[in-house]
Image 1 (cartoon, rainbow, N blue to C red):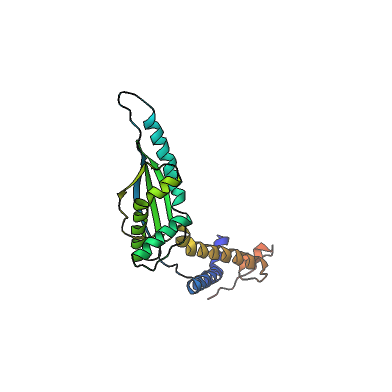
Image 2: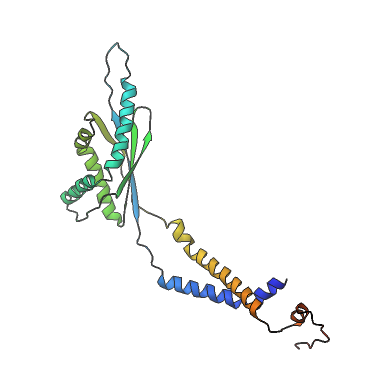
Length: 225
């Protein structure tokens, strides 16, 4: 009960701190530019060599080769060389957009006979992202023999199974959503702590409880009204 009374009497301190933090945050906060993302999927496979009437482990080795190949492709799509190829495709399309390496990222998913390569592309403009994703598809499908030869699997196949999805805006991150509530919570907590500190340092007498806390007898109390 005493703690509640202290907080109530000095409630202006945490409220003032919270209002100050809110005002400063709103005045200095910079809204990040929107980011859009799109995804597409490709199959990556190595065709096994089949010999009529003879069993071999070619299917297993083909699956294993597809796994290694897909993993290597996830590294290639984020390379400078891949970005240069995309930029050339964009220039051929008449686009002035140029991307740095790392804009395209990939993950792989295992299937029975092949691997699925899923690519994610993020960019700050929806229309430019559509051009970039189209260039990615062109590079992987038309220039794939060159990449496959570099990886030692010239007989492999890369085929698109899901065209690039419509560009979708990326929602704010958890950090961005929690930034203001966390700041306000810390301001309120600091205000409450400051209120208790001031109460501890304050030696003035306001009511009979203050006298009783000092061990002094209360002979009479004059009502406020």
